[in-house]
Length: 543
Figure 1 (cartoon, rainbow, N blue to C red):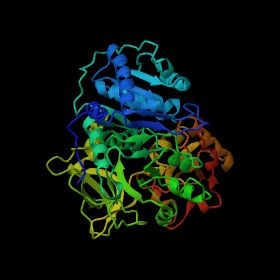
Figure 2: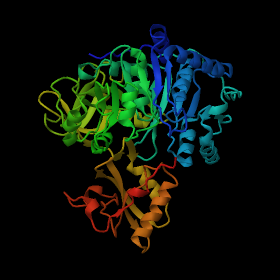
Figure 3: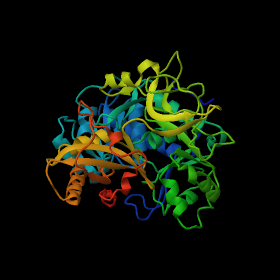
Figure 4: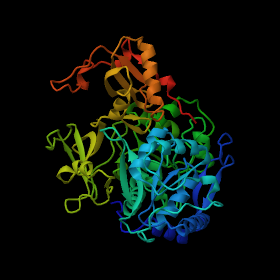
């Protein structure tokens, strides 16, 4: 059974690992001459990381930061994100990472909602922060440019700290995740939660257990997400292992970086497998030391082919920001190609229920509900949604956390993923709330009605489709492009619709609620319709 270990703090665990594994590597960045920072690569031991963390903590402490304060950070996937997090968490300061793909309006919402006491950002990101602050009603102290942190004086917080000694219940992070009602929700994660998440992952066992002081975890996913910033990072720390942190997923560089950095574990999303399988055979793809990959969303028909070509198991798992005690199909014989992601176990009890909350028979699809136990259902789970107790309690209705994921359970207890019940589009690992896109589109002067939904995408799992009723007759392609730009100016690049369908009407109920399930006949692939407009090529990162 995996460890719970939620009775300690991040600082205490990091300190114990430094004492036991001082000269072992802690954090690495692959060499990449095309990257704007550390092109030659980077690696730091636990001892050196501890010295840097202590220096950063001293600067924050001297400026008066401690328990109860929040600092928003925009440091991308750079190693400084990790070092500043450890320094701030060690003092009991809560870190609020900002998605670097957010537009100023989205950052403004995050600042208004989380009310940080300070903002730390890369110099190149300061214009976005300043524009966000101009739109925000929250007025934290001046923004600190990361590059001048060591030499400049930190702004003093406007309120005193509630202490400088965090407890396991002290908040370590607030991570924003898309909800079904529009605006992202702030998931509050405590020290005990983050440590327990890493300890649980580290002790999964089977083909996926971490070896103490012997593994190197290559994780190309963003540090503002729980996967890299909590699960694998804390998994590495509790076992004295090294996290390898590239800036993002680079298909052409993947195998070279994995091989040259000596990675023994790789983290993946479903989008990664088809991209790597389409690459021609290369010299590095069999020179690696990878023992297993761990992630979610690999297409069943690609699962066995990937393992055969590249020579290691790809372990499908389940988890979410609110509950990252991950479950995984870790024991042989694994159920490759079935979307299997593990079984219930002590510490993660499971129900599969219908829309009325009644348990469904094995082999039948239903919503996945989870809890720790009947006595302590919320142990090891997130602390709640920031400033939204109603949403927190609704998610915990009946003493079980409602995940919004549809699964089925086999007679052997194995759980298999089917789809998301919630109105969420899953694109390249990002959760996108349909309601958020609908709200933005409805602010356009030409939009009468809109329904946003997910459509299948062979490369990115799902893509955003917007069905739009216009107020006046316009050329459909011109209108679609205008609507895309309207969204793209206000939302992160991956959120605007990749497909737009201009329609005359949308089916509604008697109360004028749009019936999304009746827009297209059953079995129809909307992408094949002759008047569907493909805008996917417009979705590009701005940096």
